[in-house]
Every structure is written in structure tokens, then in C-alpha cells.
Length: 280
Image (tube, rainbow, N blue to C red; front, side, top):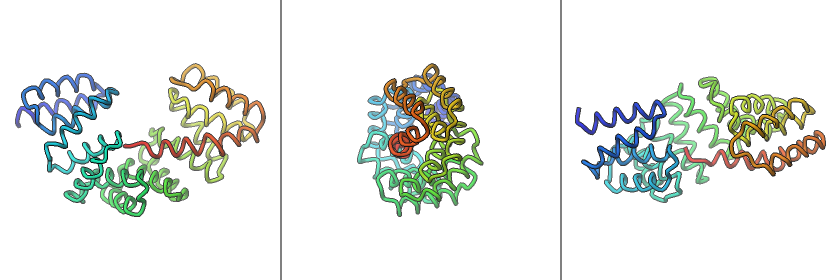
């Protein structure tokens, strides 16, 4: 094993533990001796992105791609990193990865997810369904297929895929929020409310999830549950939009119809679309 391979192994282990600052420091030290190594550059980009140092992360991803790597999995990671910054080079990297290694689920997943967010649904679904066939027990594959179907407008298909994702990963609260919003958009108000309330309980720091769950409860006349959720949101959620929280409180106090209107005609659809279009 080379020194770079050993460093990467140690760095990825730190990343698996959520120790991204230490991961970045280890990789940066190795990069000083090998400044053009695409693997070091790529994973430094990932670490800095996790640390929310977006400008630094973007620079590392661009430098990694400039080395013209041929490793499909590396290209998939770099492409996904660039996609988060709306860089047009993301498409080239992701397409190349999928062409080089069509039998690796991650390359098909990343390219398919990118295409779906660009509105190219037929091609996106071809890649995402291939990813599901390649890794049928991976919840991420089912969740991303569900997201693409939802963006296309196939809410029934999206719900089915996301239900499967949650069977495989019951602790995936992000997908649970999406599924609750999809149920609500589909007119399954009670199922949507139950799902959103469960997700809100799992995502104490997600202010929007708390607010939509409260509105869903209020729309069904579950006033005590709605007030309890809003109270938790005001104290526990980071970055809560005070004006949005106040409006939700007013709508819930105004009765079921007022809460339902804010949920189904305003906040719910916009929140669903925003979350579905976030890069992987």
C-alpha cells in the first residue's frame, strides 16, 4: 500500500466517524507532498464541504477534475461535488463516470440524480432504475428514484420507492419528511400528518419540518399536537424563521381550513420541491 493509499484509508475512516476537521488536516498535510493527486484533492473537497467551507471545497473539486482522472467512482464524487455548486463541468464528470462503469451503482445513481434535478426525467429514471437493480438493498437508491419520480409528478411511484427506502433504513428522517409531504400533496392528509409528525420528532433541529408537521396536525383538527410541535420548534429548532413560525401559529389558531391552505397551497409544495432538488 502506497503512502497516499494509507492516508486515504485513514482519512475516510475519520470521515465515517464524522471527524471532518481531522480528515481535512490529514489530507492537507499529504497534499503538500503530492499537490496534484486527484484522490487527495477530491476527498479534501468532501471534507471541506462537510465543514461548510464551500469556496475551499469547490476549488479542490475543480483541481481534482483538472487532473483528468479516469477512476469512475472518483469522477462520480467529484461530479456530485461540483453539482452542488451548479458547475456545468459536473455533467461531464458524472456522464463519464456512468459510461466508464455502468455496472457500479454509485455512478448510475449520481448521474441519474443530477439528470432528474435538471429535468431530464426519462434518462434520469433509466440510470436510477439501473442503480436500484444493481443495489436493491441500498435505501439511497430507492430514495433517489423516489425523488426523481416526485419531480416528474409521479407521486404514487415516488411514495412506493420512498416507502421501500424507509423499510431498508427506518432512521432516515430526511426521506420521511419527503414522504409525508408527498402523501399530503397526494391528498392523503391523515397519512401525511402522521408521517410528518413522526419525522418532526426525529428532526428536532429542522425548523421547517416542525412547522409543516404542526400545520398538518392543525389541518386535521389535532390542535394540541399542533401547538406542542410549534412550541418545540420555537425552542429546539436552529435557524427558525420567526415570521413563518408566527404565521403558522396564526393559521392553526384560525382553524383547520386556514392551516390546510398554508400547508397544501403554500409551504408544502415549495418545501417539497426545494428539498427534492437539493444535490446529493
